Structures are given as structure tokens and as C-alpha cells.
Image 1 (cartoon, rainbow, N blue to C red):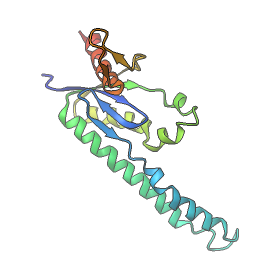
Image 2: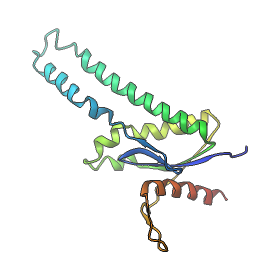
Image 3: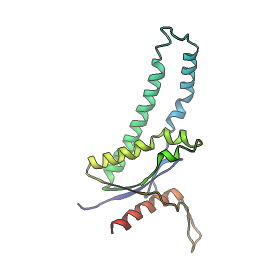
Image 4: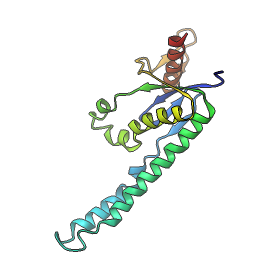
Length: 172
């Protein structure tokens, strides 16, 4: 198989992921957009009498959650299609999501875009489309300042490039 295009991915908190060619896929913050609506619907449900027939009909809440899931799924599907159709080798980091969500400041952001699902689906879609998906360990160096010129490079783009270069080094 001739390798035409390769890409490295860095999963991030601020953006969903950053590629080694400096393309950033933003974090859409879907739950944040529906937070007020969900709170209102839950508040309305809490005012209903427990055991009544209207108490057991929380369809609006279920529909709101379903809308969130569908928007998230469609957004991820678009990203997968773009990444996999353009590249033969995809190199990503192996994140421990369980450890990341222990930090309660970042939990909502991490779970909002389903990072675990992102990694799982990317691996599956790559296999389905006969692409190679490789995971490498998360690299500790995330910020780089050139010692010669003193130029500071974007740490996320640099991390995606480092992940990509690490895989090339391991395969050669």
C-alpha cells in the first residue's frame, strides 16, 4: 500500500482535536448550549406531583437529550469523514479518559464531546475504510520554544506533529 497522506492528531480541552497540519476542530460545547433548556424542563418536572400521570411523561427532557446526542454524533461523523477520506495513516494519542475526568474542573468539557467515543469511532472507521490508525502514548513535551530563534510554537499543533513524528520514528 502506497502511503500518500499521513496525519497526527492531538486531542485537546479547548478544541476537540488539532491536526499535525495545524487544522483545529473546535469543541462545539453542545451540552452547554442546551443547559438552560434542560434546567427549565427539569424544574417543570420537579413541580409535578409524584405518582401523577403527567409526572411519568418527561418526553421533552428525553427529546432534548436525544437532540444533544444526535448533534454530537453528526459533528463527530463529519470530522471522521474528513480525516479518514484525506489520509491513509492516522496517528493519535492514547488518552486515559478515566484519569482525566477525575479533575472535576474539566469533567463537563471532556464528557461533552465524548472523547472516548471519538477515539473508538476513529479507530473503527479507519479499519472499515482500510486506513491505518495508530495510537501512541501522550507526549510530555507540549510547549516548544526554539533555542536558536526564540520562536514560540503553538503547543497543540506542536503536540500533534510530535505524535506524528514519534510514530514515524517507531515504524522506521
